[in-house]
Length: 114
Figure (cartoon, rainbow, N blue to C red):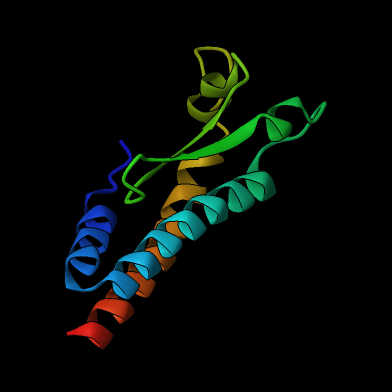
């Protein structure tokens, strides 16, 4: 399960401090989503390139969260495996790596504004 609660909490706290802090928070969240896709592109197994090319990211309406996903029907089978195929995780590890960077950036911003 992917947990973005800490990222969202930090971004929400920054939004409540000031307009510039809120803008910076939403910028960090967007960058974290883009970084997730970049890392996933590096990790995804490539046979035809279709799965790699299907990686996308959407920002929540409030700018404090994002969704990173692949649109190919078989994306989950590659990520989690099947009874006949071992998992080849690419999106979850990319997410974990990017969110760690994003959380550090938001914590630094929060320390700067408090």
